[in-house]
Length: 351
Ligand SMILES: Cc1cc2nc3c(=O)[nH]c(=O)nc-3n(C[C@H](O)[C@H](O)[C@H](O)COP(=O)(O)OP(=O)(O)OC[C@H]3O[C@@H](n4cnc5c(N)ncnc54)[C@H](O)[C@@H]3O)c2cc1C
Image (cartoon, rainbow, N blue to C red; front, top):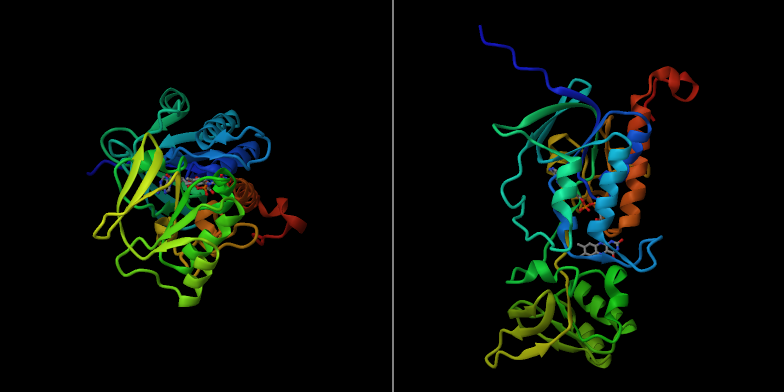
């Protein structure tokens, strides 16, 4: 007779994603005395960005430092942290089965880790690892998806060092750091034109490059707006993003002269994609633009599954928003775990 497979471990909650949203959810589930496992494949916070608008850090704080503090915080309230990739998620009655794989060497995206991140010792102390010899399975009574987004930065040598230091996309995050700097915007759409014009509140030295041979895809009136506001516009592709040590230096245009446009910073307008594969597997509703659809309290359409952070937001990609939504998701998941008698009016309803 075939030996029985060991039953998968069961947790009150599995949080997928260890950015601001997931960590905040794990802290709060832990404080509610729920067993919680957070699984993270460490991606977005590997960028070298510094947060200068996050309350409580008047001198700014590295995103990696927020994450490190978040690990300590979640671990203090009993959350188990696991380095791994949640490959699949499916329903099992009123539970959810998650299959967690080891990370390939170099992480999921083969990114160069930031040298400023004292990640490895701290990670080794607080994170578990998926054991050798195959994926592990966990049954969850509730799931919180906090899987973030994938940013579409252009590919070029030195790109990973530049992201967050001199290669940006968000004026709310980095506009202030562009004051009086020489800035290039790369993009052919109305978003790019708007970014170039909005940057004028920070610097007068703005140039826009379409970033593709077909040129700009905006009405002539918008090109006229750029010209009227002193913004040079080049309808060319970019053959080289010159950079050194994380510092952008120039955009080299795809024209016969290989025109070189010196820049100190570049904003790229290539957008992001919500990481929603697990959401699809679980049958969650998505928005038309692909984010996980949630209520104002982070409920999805599947009872017991919650989502928070960038994966649920089209525009509001901020650490403060993600942390708040992680809290809300935890409160929702905790409510789901209450016995009916513990709910408002002893009501069996899960809302
Ligand atoms: C260059 C840059 C500059 C920024 N500047 C600022 C700023 O100044 N101020 C500000 O407030 N915000 C800023 N942001 C945005 C901020 O970083 C995000 O809004 C925030 O990180 C969102 O948190 P999150 O938890 O939703 O997602 P993330 O931080 O992206 O975390 C999601 C995590 O989920 C993991 N994950 C995804 N799928 C899986 C899976 N299947 N299994 C396991 N793990 C998985 C990812 O690896 C990732 O670690 C910046 C972002 C970038 C990239």
